[in-house]
Image (tube, rainbow, N blue to C red):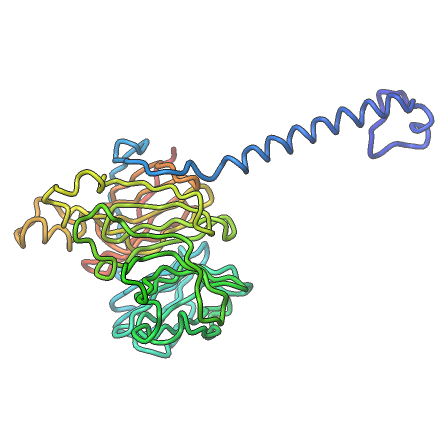
Length: 382
């Protein structure tokens, strides 16, 4: 064996005798320098990746590409469902809450093969519900009853398991300190939600965190939008949110206003994307109509976030055109963002409906709000 044959980490006894200490030290030092440089670069990436904080006025021109997609009907309806109210989807399963059957219908995804029907302990049609993210082991998602505050966990075995009930988020909301609660995230120790503290005259919607099973919550960040005159967070409280990067970051999209906020889970480093430029253009007479209407699930993909915007959905179009026939059919706009809150692409789907994303297969699916059919769309490759 020659000196050039010696491989550090698999050195023969002959090699140990044949290599000089100075040469070995030089090789180790060189490799250590490479490892240090790689670690330094990774540190720079992780430290600078999130976020470019501040408020940024953006528009459709800030997206790289706008694609117009025509769908193909793949199912007349989801088997066993009548009127789908809300969806929860991950890479392999789809959960549909139905306000007619009053049950959760679980399907394989993207095959849409029925897996199980889960009975609910209350009427979905009268109480309403919100799905939310968790990182609890063996749990698919969380479900909160909008009226009485009950929280259930849908396990990976597709059983409902009632969560612990702290007074902040489990008593009827009209007798508690926090009103109009929207769940955001739950881990082993804490529960995050947005709400209004009704003990305050400000009636300010904020992001809160509470230790599970306790009564008091810590205010993390105000979600108020002061730019709109006469804006009332109790009248327009709703929004959608998602947590990503293992519970480190969150995105919040206002349902009624075209504003998004990306932030750390402690409420710091907030990046606001303001499409409507509400701070300066609220005098526009259309502001009551041209709004965000972000609804459904924020889908966390491998490399980006997907949000469905129904700005030109049937509800908005009827208000814009005063009940007259709109000059085009309602549609769904899908917006994608990087994990750092940078606009990427927009996709205009030819129908309005509940969005599902198959990142692996490169497809969008929607449940059409008109005839409840399931339609598929090929996502163009970048």
